[in-house]
Every structure is written in C-alpha cells, then in structure tokens.
Amino acid sequence: MTRVRLENRYLAIQQLYEEENFSIMLLCEIAKVARASYYKWLNRTPTDEDKLNKTLLEEMENLHQKVNGIYGYRRMTMNMERQFDRPFNHKRIYRLMNIAGIQAVIRRKKKRYSKSTPQHVADNLLNRDFTASKPNEKWVTDVTEFKYGMSQKAYLSAILDLYDGSIVSYKICTSNNNPLVFDTLKQALETSSDAKPLIHSDRGYQYTSPGFKYLIDNAGMKHSMSRVGRCIDNGPMESFWGTLKCEKYYLHQKDYHTYKALVEAIEEYIQFYNYERYQKRLNGLSPMEYRAKAA
Image (cartoon, rainbow, N blue to C red):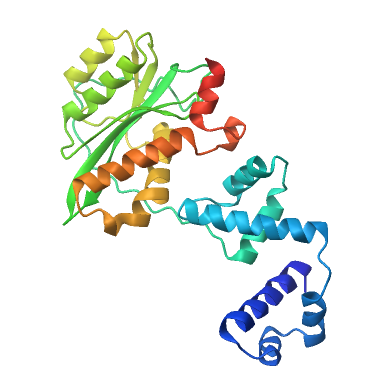
C-alpha cells in the first residue's frame, strides 16, 4: 500500500475518532491498518514538509470555500504558488486535495439553439487560430441563455479578446434580440475607440443581420463566422460560457429568484474572471494583469 493511501486512511481514522468518538480498534480494522502503525503515525515528530503540508491544506480549504469549489488542482497550484511565493509540484497539490476531499465542481453540458436562415454570411477567417499578438487584434462573441425565477429567461451577450481572454464588453437582457448584440459591440468600440479587430461569431440571426454588418463595416472591422454546425470554430467563447456556468451559475441556480439577482451574480463573476482568476497560459496572471503588461 502506498504512503499516500496510508496517510489518507490515518487521517480518516483520526477525524472519525475526534468527531464521532468511534473506537480506534474498530476504525483500524475497517481501514485494514495495524493499530501500532496508526499510533506510530499519530505520535510522529512532524518534519518541515509535514508542517508545510498542514499549512497548505488549511489555505487550500479556505480558498476552496472562498471560491465556492470552482478550482481544480491546476488553478489551486497557481494560487498557492502566489500565496507562498514559491513553486509547488502540481502532483503535490493534487495529492493534498485528495487527502482533504477537495474537488472542483463539474461542468455541465451546454444547451444548443435552433438554427436560423442567414442574411449576410462571412468566411471563417479566424480558422481556429485562437492566438493574438496584441490586445484588440481578434475578438470572439456569442450569446448564451440563463434561467431564473419560474423558468424565466435572460440572455448574456459578450465579446472576448483572444489576446488575454478578457471580457471587453457584455450586455444582459431578457430578450435575445438584435439590440442586445448591437449594444455589446457598441460598448466594446466605445471602450477601445481605436480598435479595428477581426471579430468572429457564429451564424446566429443577429450576426447575419444587415444591422450588425453595418456596424462592422462602419467600424472598419472584418467579420469572421463559424462554419455551419462547427461550434468549435468559436471555441474560446464556448469555453468561457462553460466556465461561467460551471463556476458560478450552476452552483447557485436555485438562488436566482429575480432577474436582478441573476444580473448581479453574472456581473460579479465577470469582474472576478477579468481581475482575479489566474490562468496558467497567462503566466499565472489574471486577464487584466496580463493586458496591463502589454500597455
């Protein structure tokens, strides 16, 4: 039996004895470990690494509670490295998370929408090249659906910058209509007035409408569209929707009794995502920290 598996059993015995007052003899029999081995482990002199592991476990459990369980071992590793100002092997963090029973929430399957007849269609210029060398070079956009109250619906439209993954603009509305999408683009252009990025979308009716084409042409931008039935062509945007719903929406779905409560939760998460959610591909920085370095 490996040392890690034994330690897991010893910790379980200790916890059940202290919290439930079960017999040590009975617990050792159930765990199939010798009582002498358990007492030897219990009375050992902690090494520096044991002390560090204990401190790590405490900080990881605190962070797990703070972020409502959305962090897996990779993001937990980045946060611990920041907090302790030293590197940690991700396998160590993974092992400690297993010992403490810390597990990230699981992403749910995304709902799909019905197809519409396009009026203006663009080629797939992005062609799944999801990299950008500078801010406002490539944007991706989409709309997703949420439910609140008695199965009432709300819609979130957002634009994501492929340079750093930041959400550069977003709008929330109870109607999935043209103004929702148009206002999202207008907000992004107001925030970045000199920007003329390539913008990629799916073939939803708002993006193929004459109004959206007018906004694109008037801003001097190029439009790229996903191919029919190829949601992976807009992969980063789909990924953000999954992350948002997994890490925020699904955890508290029963709490969204009103439209206001849902909007506040979405706004809170996007603020957290842009400024506090560290990403390994951004060298352990948040999107806005990474963006600031390019300024």
